[in-house]
Length: 373
Ligand code: UD1
Ligand code: UDP
Image (cartoon, rainbow, N blue to C red; front, side):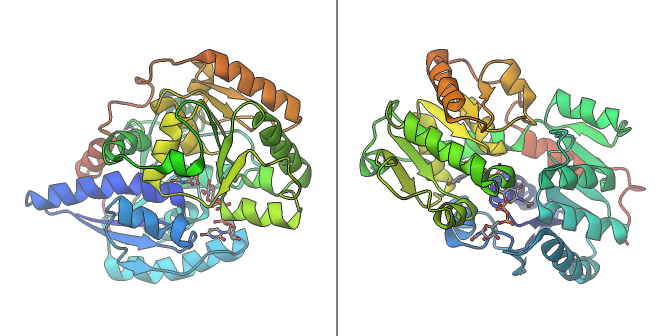
């Protein structure tokens, strides 16, 4: 069986790392399974891309496109154009896509048009906010897929509400949980916290990159003000996504001394991110992956958005929503999160064997579903 995997953005490298490892493990036992990994180039900076391949031992992409830093239409269109002949030449049994980025949509659409079955990891997530580019990508990918690998019960209910039911929906658990279990063991003793001038349990960790927060000057201003106010309580470590860095510079939001207690740093690799997450007192984020990792590492989370796809985290009290409408309400949410204390993780996202479940589902697909385009 040949699997053609399409990745392009940071969270997809983290997700693909554990599935690729499982495919290679099975191939090592003599099973006829192989992967053709394709990187679209959507994320291209060393700290947004190569560092993950190196640290997480992800196989080198067989094909590496250079399609990043463009508008949605240009990016998706060029990906479609370049993925199609590669899929035709590789003639895979499956095209495997992850999450909800433009690379996900392009991979799923190119494959479906060629009648190559699509497997979608992280199927069924919904924010019910069609203004988000991710919502459009994930709805489209789910409806193009022949195999829907759903991480949560809520995801399965969301798929059912759109008529996506039956054998093609497979509860898989969450692949990022696998990643957190496996790679957190590789984090050695480092002086990262010391270098940042913070101590374990006494700093906030922030990440912000969602288009709806970054491209809206008022919202970004509120978020910066909230981080500035929070940093009076504890230092804030903020690895800045390049999209956000660009906007902050353009809006001159980094000027002045109100961010003196905010450690503004470049994006970090996964192993450093895990350390920063594990030792934070509260995590403030608009990232999907980071919300879950906060839960995996038992750190209270404040999600700076109006809604989340990972509703079970809010329901169990691990996470709270703080829309970027006012700095004061975000700071109040951080204060409340500080009071939450430690809560036991586990249970919501499977048993840490999601990668095995995904590959088993690909292998178990009925022959009629696996046909070449
Ligand atoms: C993308 C995904 C988003 C995901 C996020 C993960 C879409 C529509 N969005 O958002 O769902 O949560 O990745 O991080 O697919 N840039 C660089 N260097 C890079 C990457 C990006 O400078 O290595 C800058 C460029 O100016 C680029 C901008 O960031 O135009 C936005 O990048 P893009 O990939 O379009 O979207 P993200 O905001 O990263
Ligand atoms: N991440 C990282 N370094 C950073 C910020 C995030 O390694 O500086 C990791 C994070 O731990 C998680 C993934 O990137 O595994 C989440 O990606 P991101 O927040 O970019 O996207 P989202 O999950 O929101 O789609």
